[in-house]
Image (cartoon, rainbow, N blue to C red):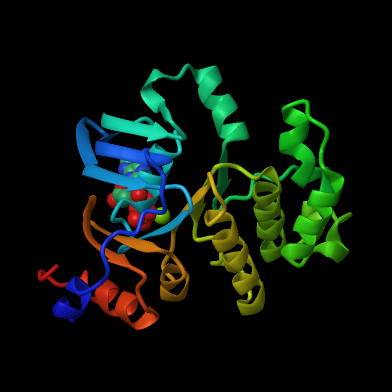
Length: 260
Ligand SMILES: Nc1ncnc2c1ncn2[C@@H]1O[C@H](COP(=O)(O)OP(=O)(O)O)[C@@H](O)[C@H]1O
Ligand SMILES: [Mg+2]
């Protein structure tokens, strides 16, 4: 197995001079009682435009913490992060908020939908917050892409969890951000919708000027990515390029052993 992994192709960055997401020696500690517990032990990575990169690893290995730091939702304890050309620690709160709204999209497990607004209105919300006119055609076609054409006028309380997740996804897709962060984006979806959503994320990731970073447990999702970063105990321990589902599954299983 090791030989097979080492034989993987070298990094194929598609032409971008600087990565859209760059992390240098990122550490993150949380205060637990009187102790400081370090969760990320020095993570460095780069994600270039037109790249879709997966982060995999056992539960508790620090994937979500890493994603939150890269997205500017949590401040790292030390280390540097550059997102869409901007060093995060140099941004004011207001600039960070503006950047998160206009250049960065989040597909997380909590949906953050407004219960009193329809699906269409929820998808239009980022435009309204930026005082921009919502592109109604794009919003309608995005809702159709995620299989919600018929539910455009429904409000979140009358929707299933899967439907709500798709509204949240449509909101990100319609925003057309440069960088999309996704934490288990297909986890709650049926197979067909999951495939649609994955195809849409891949399509966006491969658009010039954009990239997607996705945390996933699903080897099929990871195998659709250009690169896969494997985490264990707060460190990146392996990287695969253009891997097959079988290689991903084998590598993931191997993470439990001391060999990695
Ligand atoms: N706010 C927090 N305070 C203390 N510990 C945390 C906090 N957030 C996460 N952790 C701990 O950090 C570790 C990594 O968590 P997480 O990043 O959610 O892992 P993953 O997403 O890989 O499952 C876990 O041990 C978790 O308990
Ligand atoms: Mg997590």
